[in-house]
Length: 112
Length: 114
Image (cartoon, rainbow over all chains, first blue to last red; front, top):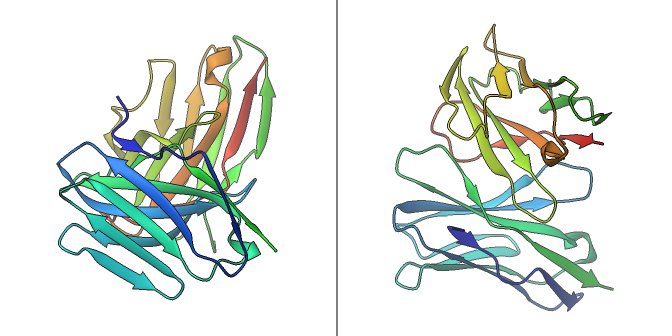
């Protein structure tokens, strides 16, 4: 049973436009959420995170929104750049649990 | 080191062989994690070390998998009697302290079992 779901395997956007990546979760114990970005042949790198006590966290071009009632989070990238093309993983953890549960990832392609 | 270093980057072996994968975490990071990423999937937790001891090995798929961290720094993931289903990218990550949510990952070791 997948506890973190990224239902879109891929997304393609034009440079300069907004990219919106979505993630749903089922485990109510999750209280911390992260987005990781992965380029080919590299390990995942941390991008941005949000605690369940917040509903929004912003860092430059990246904003993560959390809707706890819907068990849904999204990552917005504005404006999108070709260098943002990568696989984006949503991950979650709960309480003092150090384990991260990852989604399957979404491949973002930003076209020049 | 500056980042998490994993060797080998690629390993091809035959079914039934023994394999060791090495992880050198960021200097001073006390927590070390192994994850496995199969094709088309996200990383899945295998084992977590706090210092020298395995604090949680609940993600290891079976007793063919074992990991050690004898001096609290470098860790080795050991796979006995490899099977084709073990083919995956094995990712190591470290964090400064236990319970930290933000992990720094290495580039991974891609294991192919023929």
